[in-house]
Amino acid sequence: MQKNIWFTSDLHFGHESILYFRPKRRELAGITLEELKADKKAAIKVHDQWLEDLWNSKVKRNDMVYIIGDLSMLKKHDTELLLGRLPGKKFLITGNHDKSCKGLERFFQWTGDLKEVTFDQGQFPFIRENEQFVVEMCHYPLLTWKNRPIGTCMVHGHTHGAVDGINENSMELRIDVGMDGRFAQYDLVDIETLYRHFETVREKTGSKSFRDHAEWLMARDGFRM
Image: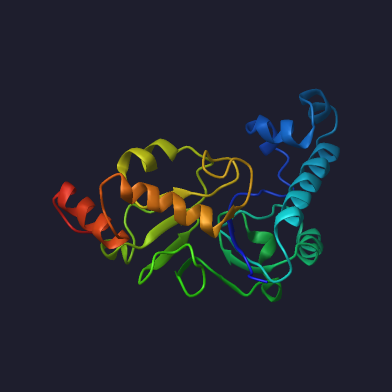
């Protein structure tokens, strides 16, 4: 069976305050504002179980999951227990709220601040023939990145949807896959959905490849970066 690849960011396990900032999470987890105010610790447990159930409903044991930062604000021991329950081969692109993951590197295939991965039609039939789908991952949205001029796509988190409009209006090959953003809509993003999104962006300019789209962007802006 073909393994799947997933992308996600900003899950914020154990982060009580996010239930105030992101009311949609309360709604999806079935938590009322009154319940949150009455018992924050009980509310975040319900939230975390909702997130864990969501993960387990999508990710199979041999799937690969790229976690683009801010996985857990639980205590280290609780994060360790959580990681043991989450299936999939996990890669952590570290964010600003991943202190509890330090020392738990054995639960990940890889950890670091920046990661570039290449996919092609041999792995996934939906990718165009003779094309490489290259993804650069960083927790923080980058204005430019190493291989932007040749059509590498930038995938980030951190902003909780705050730069969705900027990403869309800029026509850049850049997207926020964080849980609270417009693209993910409180779900994990699979690789085909991610690829189709970037395909749609480039088709708006009539570009036949990601590299052609990058050339279009640089011609529009009048400089290369």
